[in-house]
Amino acid sequence: MKVVIVGNGIAGNQVAFSIRKRCQDTDICIVSAENVPEYDPCSLPYFLGGDCEERSVFRKMADDYTNHRIQLMVNSKVASISPDVKTIVTENGSRISYDKLVLAHGGDLFIPPIEASATRAYSAASSSMRRSSCVLTTEPVRW
Ligand SMILES: Cc1cc2nc3c(=O)[nH]c(=O)nc-3n(C[C@H](O)[C@H](O)[C@H](O)COP(=O)(O)OP(=O)(O)OC[C@H]3O[C@@H](n4cnc5c(N)ncnc54)[C@H](O)[C@@H]3O)c2cc1C
Image (cartoon, rainbow, N blue to C red; front, side, top):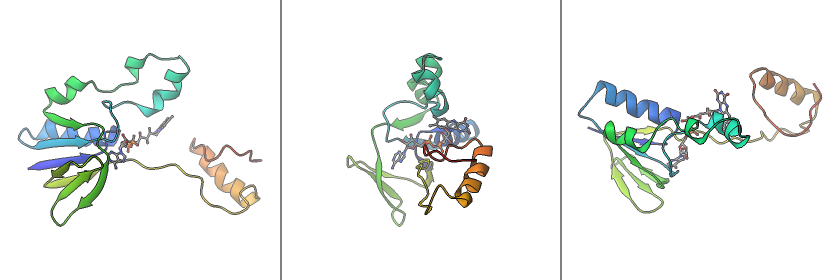
């Protein structure tokens, strides 16, 4: 059984290391668009602000993958998936087959295309977002 995981963030790593903990004979491969081991995105502002050291940003080292027999393919952005033949292809042309595929590629932030975004209705929506600590926009909004 070969499990291929797209994305080397917290979700992808959690899947990979959880499978390894429970199953020793599964081939596990993480395919990552980035070129580093797992890091904690939440700590980046603290690192950039000089409030924490680089080593505390990283949640894994390269050895962690080797020691757990997890293949980490860096610089390998997945460009297409062919579920009929259970294969993915990366932008640099690598073709990887799988038995099970896990998509853990995160999400993109965007500002919703809400017309008249400074109106009261938008403020109400933003207010509920603010309560859950989300920053929706850099535009000034009256609460
Ligand atoms: C500055 C900052 C502060 C945050 N603070 C908090 C907080 O306080 N609390 C909280 O709960 N959350 C916080 N978050 C959000 C949290 O970091 C994310 O929810 C979490 O990292 C999501 O993890 P993930 O593994 O799902 O996705 P991601 O961390 O986005 O990882 C996805 C990975 O997939 C890779 N990828 C994407 N597309 C492809 C592709 N086609 N092929 C190969 N690889 C691909 C990406 O390069 C990335 O490495 C914060 C985020 C940031 C940036």
